[in-house]
Length: 298
Image (cartoon, rainbow, N blue to C red; front, side, top):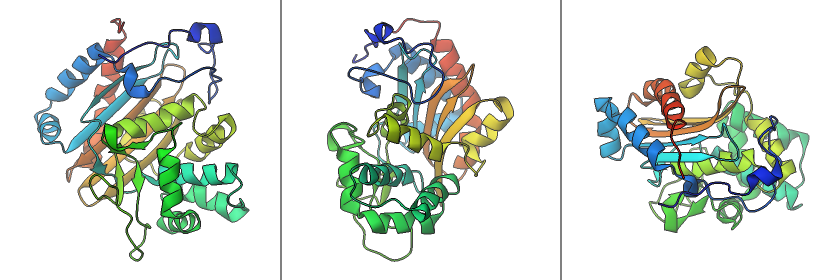
């Protein structure tokens, strides 16, 4: 069991903060080190109640990660197939966003109004042309180096891979496949969850750039999958999100931040009905979070 709590966060007084990113001092534990075995058991039990979902998990065609952020001093994590690298379509555009902000922060590229517009189009509307323009500006090596950065480790072969962008979102252009599975646009649910988790605590690049990325991710224009359900059950919550779909591959990732809801959900699915499955996952996953809070993860 690799779980441990934020043992010293009480001294940093982050519990009462509401705006993102949270002000946080000291080393940030890796999100998977916060795995709560009771939460893990509840998640598996909840998924197993649906025969279709259980089969997808068993066949490694479905990956799930959840992070409960209701108490920033005791963040908990659970996942199924969460280190399984899967094709994730447009979801890995968050990696392009990270690399662009990293390049801007390091003065490697000049930020323009057109680029800011492209970043918003890339995330909010998942615009392929805007994404390709940014990829062409950065290059695949820059995207890879940002993901492999020791402070982020959003791609790491020793933990199953992670986020990867190795092809333009266009019909032309060379491939730069990930070393593990040869995917052009890949992800593990654990590393996608880590992306949002690090944003929450202002640790993707730095506090300023984390805040800027959150603004880009905020209030998505596309309202399917997780967002479709969240608009019905949590219209008052702020949603930060990126999703993707191609053929049978459906993925979604969301950071939900509201008075009664503070969590991260990630789902990667290889199934023709994946879009509806992702919609249907929200309530059961909220139930997992709620039930797990009754138990100690020490």
